[in-house]
Amino acid sequence: MMSVEPEEVYVLGGLRTHLGLTHGCFDKIRPEELGAALFRAIFKMWPQAKKADEVIGGNAVGPGGNLMRLTALTAGLDPSIPALTVDMQCASAAEAISLGWAKIRSGMADLLLCGGIESTSLQPLRIYQPQDPFYRKEGYKVARFSPDTDSPRAMLEGAERTAQWYGVPREELDAWAVRSHRLASGSKALLAPYVVSLFGSNRDEGIRPRMSPALAGRMPALFTEEEVLHLINPLRAAAGEAPLGHAVPSLTAATSCLTHDGAAFLLLVSGRRLLAWQRAGHPAVPWARIAEVTDAAGDPRFSPLGALRVGDVLLRRSGLRCCDLDAIEYNEAFAVIDALFLRDHPECRDAYLPLGGALAYGHPYGASGAVLVLHAVAALKARKGRYGLCAIAGAGGTGSGLLLENIE
Image (cartoon, rainbow, N blue to C red):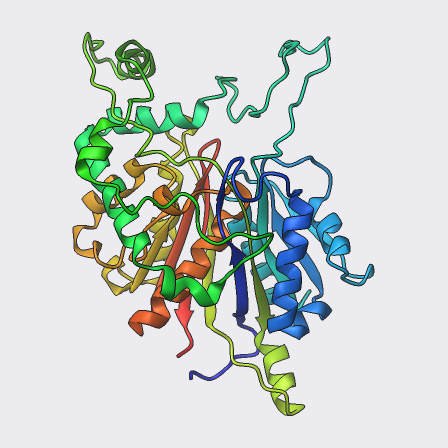
């Protein structure tokens, strides 16, 4: 075990729920109930979590308000413990961890519960006021992420646009879907220490052990040729290029994430607190050190690129090369992220999503960043590796991520 430094931030532990499909195993479980049940499971394994300085958690499509405060109170945490809810959409949990890291590094806190919760099954319908120009009597579920569109399919459109712009064909994307399900199907035992069964759940519901090239090839495209041309030709015109008259859709139901319910939280601790526990005769062994955190942003029309930007920034700040990483966890919301990553880093295939990715496990928006960290820890421990990188894109072209160092 490496020595503990007082000013550093460590992952003491953490758990996630099974990841249920929308209207699956957590269909009727309110998000604060799901999060509170996960907190109680964490308290059993790490009783010191009950004395956390604060709860910081992500949520993207919940009922609004300070959901983390409601969750903390539902779990029985002392009312004197504050809580903060973060909305960076898909990157919310990663950003919650980033904020926790900053609070500990600054000396504002020593012990924090950071992660996220999502219930797409109970995602509420919203409605603008009648005087708002975006008012529709039928209401809406998907918020606006960019001033140039109010499309409820903005994230899917961003993925299709990215695949078309960078010339990533359907066949290349299909191969990633098959890989993700294959690796996830074989990783259940390795992840078991990091997953807790709640409300009768018994598995991650999105994993398809029988996913094959033939099955992926039969999945329907999510866009028509006309829709693809509508997505790509304005960009070509702006670049002074002639419009395309023909296009082959790339994105399918296999190469884009389904929607999920789930929760995941980590217990972050300062080196100061670890050393104090050690002096008091109650030592605790953390899993990993969080060496670096970052955010990134770019063109919202190409939102999947947020994860790639985050990874590049983390490597540049740390002075590491991609080949120095033993576990690389990019949130696999769309297979185009995988394809573009491998084009840039072909030498890192084995380290990239070694347990499979979100195309198989699922993507419970506000919780996914914490899921990535737990999977990175599991992979590092199994491989006896040193460095792990987690990166996730958020709606609107944002991204958040962190660099881990294995303690063993």
